Length: 315
Image 1: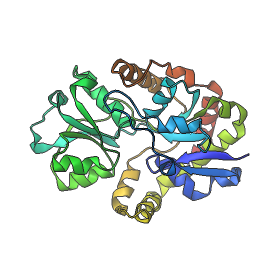
Image 2 (image 1 turned 90 degrees about the vertical axis):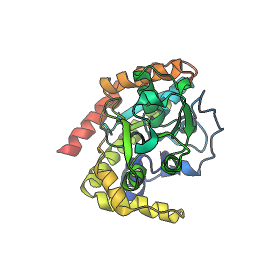
Image 3 (image 1 turned 30 degrees about the horizontal axis):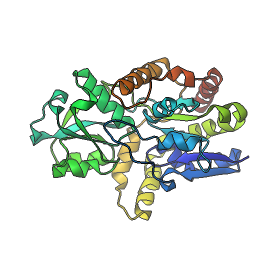
């Protein structure tokens, strides 16, 4: 059977795995689906909804069977009624990004963002980080003007004065830090673990256990290679950017990869607690159409398989 795996550079593990040929040894009929080549989702109002491209394509013809994203997209999937199953999580990515402003902006704390323009890649983990930061100081989503900048454009908009603050992520955040005096309003570690999350549909998980196990094993092997060879891994991202007519710095990408955790871990109770709290906030602020139960997406046998694979990878 053909196993369709979605990938894009923002999930570093799957992006490198796409180029390593490891999964093909176990599953010769792998079909790699580049998320960037899929049709753009219908636009949503950043003030009242979340985009759902990742979850919708998990259940669509021409989409994929397995995908890895950040913290927020699985919550969108559950809120839309998709029967999503969690596969595993990365370690905390607390150094991957944070909420920043320029030092001369006059903004000293998160509370100063009331009525201000804040850039995020809407629908990603950045939406969750901003909402968690606002909630901690007694503000709501309606108290700021969120601006969907995408992942790459926010830094330039902040410097140009089009944004008052920005949830920046590496390596893009490094370019702003190197050229400007940046103030951190809130880091990631104090808000949530910000793990990557791999997920699938319940139907695929239940009927393709061996294939799912092969994907996890390949991720473990590939991630171990990235950790041991960050500069070589960084080359995949730089070459991809150049091939698309852009630019990327090898040293910056290497630094970003060195600072990230590698390997797939079972979904933890602490992660689920963070997700449930965030899902409740998203629903209360009108960004999800309903509340969800994140533990409905957890299947014990998958966690046991991931744990066994993780242990084998460290021997």
